[in-house]
Amino acid sequence: MRFGRVSSWLLLLALPALALAALACEEEEEEAAATPAAEETPAVTAPELADGTLQIGSDIAYAPIEFFEEGTENAMGLDVDLANAIAEELGVDVEFINTGFDGIISALQAERFDVIMSAMTVTEERQAEIDFVPYITAGTGILVQAGNPENIQTMEDLCGTTVAVQVGTIQVNQLEDQNELCDESITISTFDLNPLAVEQLRLGRATAVLADYPVAAYDASLSEGELEIAGAPFPPEPYGIGLRKESTELNAALSDALQAVMDSGKYDEILADWGLEAGSIK
Image 1: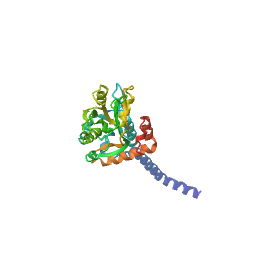
Image 2: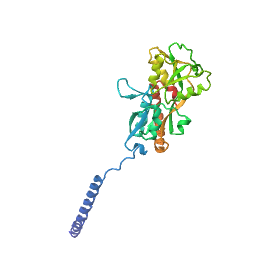
Image 3: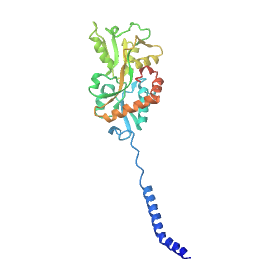
Image 4: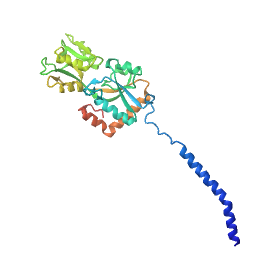
């Protein structure tokens, strides 16, 4: 009986402590529930993407690299698909901003968008102004009327002719370089958009159009037999995503995201969708 009384007394002493412990546990659980979970580290820390959107300046009139779906404002093409794949790796959205090619570098430097993705060939002159993340290679092609009536095969054959070309492109430089070697100069007719240059060829106002080979080949394929590619493409040069010199964090993020797209196999799929597998830089 004595042992039983002591045990009961000890139990009575322990009850308040147990109650306090239970109350403390309950309060800790409530505090834990009230404390928000730590936010996940964002995929990209580059300041340009603080709003969750990658803004891309692009001249959207250069099929199949970038162009508007007929009758719509929906951008499509290789650059669009690849940009979306890169943005998915970064965990951000994409916004394409249609911009004339001739002023696209100055628009980037004025911070009207984050990057350029517009079939822009990497050159020493451009690298002096902006940085690049290369993502595909493409040569230059000569587009002529069906049957190649002037028998154009090389750049030398363009001497003494009129060639239509989009302003601001590397092809303008190529024609100017060729003119230094010609006995009879090439008349270089520049246009704001590549389709306008192609129209001059259709109308017989130009002997040829000079453009990136994928674009020239695409124009020929859509011409219903009116146009064709002359000769072989010029040696390929890389396209690059253009960035401001100070965008070092974004440059690193884009490079890593592009590599992830390549490693996943998505890069090969996108190039195959547009028939541009030969331009792979893998």
